[in-house]
Image (cartoon, rainbow, N blue to C red; front, side, top):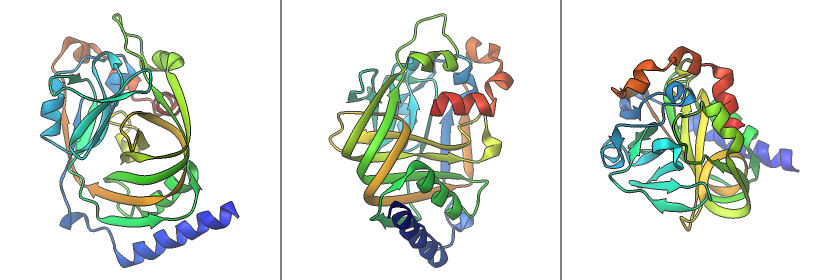
Length: 262
């Protein structure tokens, strides 16, 4: 029965894909990112871009805060900090970020999900819809989540450890039958080191009390929206830590996937 329900969603996606093709030239706006994920992998946890500056470039996205002091969700133009206890709060405009990505979210695809589907099935169907696979995609699910597992990194102190060491002590949480939003980006494989190859998703509950970096999930029903862009803007920090970081070592696809999926 579960497989049949996943096939129902696949059929809906395929039907919508036939009706509405992705046309990058008609819908180009900027994916803005501060720093590189490869730098975060190497322990570059202090940023130079404030939340106020970040929000000038987009109303939707994710990231982290200085010293890895919590995960970030940007939703409807508001930046939320998701702390080590799993609690959500509105971030100060003056707070700094060492890594974040945002876009002005203008979905070109919107459809209803009315059947349960797990992480692998959902992301596989999204991949099938990504006709322009070498562009950047923004994805948002809003609705009832049957099960979700998420993590929040804990604030670090200097000397900073690499991210692969930090996530060994991360705080993990699980919820069942919760209403919320899962959002994030699909980065093309060639962008390894810039971002996460594949899907990088964060979660926040409808009541804005909890959330974090998504590790696993089963969706139940809700709304799926997809945006895409061919415009990429990188804002690199002019700091000694960034200049000294071994970014080639931090751009290992295996290491990034281990750190992000655990």
